[in-house]
Image (cartoon, helix red, strand yellow):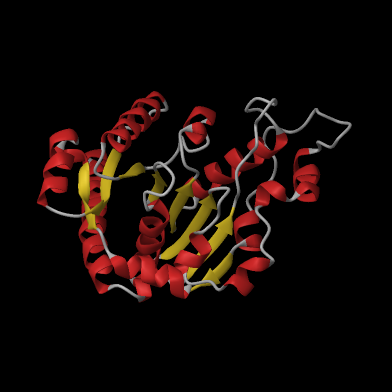
Length: 264
C-alpha cells in the first residue's frame, strides 16, 4: 500500500497519516512514513519527542549528500537525473512505535523551476519507496498542489485528500483529483475531518461522490489535547482510532478490489 495524504494546511492530514501508519505497524506491517511537508510535524504525531527529532535533517537539505549523488554543486549545474537513492530510507529513517520516519522535506523552486538537484533526489526517493513492495508507505505531503505539478507522487496507489466541511476544502479536492488524473492516478479519495454534526456530514455527502468518501473524523478535543501534551494522538484518543479504523478498512478494500481485477 502506497498512500499520499494531502490537503490544505491545517485540515488534519498529518493526524490521519500518523494514525494510519501506527495502525498498519500494529498489524505487523513494515511501515515507512515520509514527511514531505516543510512544516514537518509527522514525527511528533507518530510519538517522537522534540529531542529525538531535533537532530534529524530533511534529505532535501543535505547539500553534501545531494552533491555526492547528483554531481551538482554551486559551479556545476549539470547533474545526474537518476542518482543512487536505494540506501537512503534504511540509512536515514528513524524508528518509533514500529514506524520508520523519513524526513524528505520539500523543494524551494522560487526562481528555479521544478528541475533542480533537490527535486531530482526527492522524485527518485519517492519512486524508490513505491517500489519497496514489502512496505506500507505513507507520504504526508506539503499543503497545496505544487507536489502534483512537479509530479513527485505519480507512482502512488492512492491519494487521500483531507478536507473540512466547507466550499474551499471541496474545491481543493476537485483540483487535486484533476491534477492526479493527469498523472494517471485514478484513486483520489476523501476523508472529511473536523466534522461537528449531521449538517456537516450531509454537506460532505452532497459534494463528494459516495465511492470516493472514505469516512469522517469528527471534531475531537482529545486530538488537540494530545498535541498540547506532545503525544501521538494514536496513544491519546480511542475515538480517533475507531474512526480511522473504518477509513483504513475502506482503503484496504479498495486495494483488494484492484488486486482482484488485476488477477482477472
